[in-house]
Amino acid sequence: TDWTLCEATLTAPEAASHLTIRMQLCKASGTAWFDDAFIRSPSAASDQRAKPKTSPKPTLGAFDPAASRQRTGAGVEPRTIRVRAEDYLSPEQADAALARAKSAQADALICDVHPDGRLMFPSALLPMPRVVPQGHDPLGYLVEQAHKESIQVIPAFSVFALGRLAADHPDWEVVSADGKLSDDWRRWACPAKTEARGFLVSMVLDALRYDVDGIALDDLRYPDADYCYCDFCRARFRREYGIDPLDIAQNPDKLRSRSEAFRVYLLPFGSERQVRSAKQFVGGMADRAKLGDLKRPGVLVCSDLSASDASAEMVEAMASYVREGGHLVLLDGPVGVGDKFPKFRELVGAAGNCRWLPVDVSFRRDADHPLVADLPDASFGAAGRSLTSPATATVLASFGHVPAILLNKHGNGHVVVFNFEMHKASSAASQALFTKTLEWLAKQSGAKLGKGKLHAARQAWDKWRADQLADFVAKVREGVKKARRDVPIFTLPSP
Image (cartoon, rainbow, N blue to C red; front, side, top):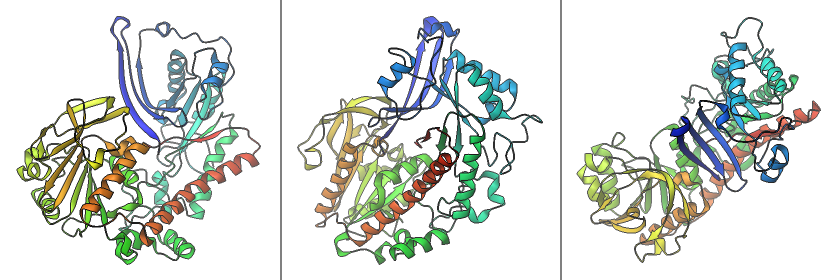
């Protein structure tokens, strides 16, 4: 929950060098994960980093600057590069990948070994990709050649991606609250099912036959918050808590206490990653939104709304809900919706669009209002789209000349627009500001943002799902211990 996604492009024209990175940074642990790095340089000599001729293999895990300096020399940090499966299928491709790693002075390679239900090494559990040359062992070759260069190799497993294996085990797949299988091409496995978990743990442990330097667990999660509601998960949770998790998702009023009369609805848009980010940010407090069937008192929270998502009927439903006493919160400025639908401009009380790259920004309070009374004076990286021309809306806070938070009264309700990707900041400050906004809106409706039986059930369900993932990791650790292998196990963050 403390990961921040950053993207930057660095160019040095005089050296004709170019670097584009997508990095995730965890401030709490000081860990950085480079999701993608694209390097173009005329010569490795342009890198002035002094690398010792002989250096011990770094120990992976949370980044420790002091330990790093001891391993690789003063002021020098270990470098890790990810190698995708298609980049080391043959010996020639593996040699090229190692050459790039040496050029970048990498200390370790994290290599994908589980693409599309196949393995990048011979195994009795799964076949290798058909394009692997006859008799070739991609992982074995990469480990052998990399160790000659004192470079570590850490196989990475997209642990719950069944891929083509799903055709043989359709009962292993996750099921949504609507009773549908995931439409993700990776075909996700249910982490709770004993048979599926046992097979996938064995698959990971099979890599210990090689002299690998660690095990990386990738995509250690559900496809999104709408999984898994298979019969197995429902029966186990019902047995442990006396509640059908499907009621939590589809019949929340069945569990709602009087203290939870103020409803919070979530309507996320955008890519799979954006939807997942919004669901994680709002957490277990939100009902599934069905426009035209929103109850009051309550608030509709929308994320990443754009003109391509909106329709005249949608805008009318939102406007009607707010006019009649409901509220609307927009996470990130809506792209082009106001240009397409004048009624939407009237609803939010502002217009205009602009974009800015991830940069350090600081809040500035522009109005004396309870929502921003305790707004932290802090700088942070932000990205997003902004409604730049307020009409009836009040600018509560801004990023310099760019409005950051807008409030508009519309009929009997209110609209709050956060002109940045608030749900992707994943910081305590943004979460506190969001909760405070909901509490203030509830107060305007003469209600409270309460916690009761429904909230407790949602918390229990979220914890139960997380426990299934933790149990999987525990099984892997247990297997590594039984194999008497002293290798680190770590998870790769999912943005």
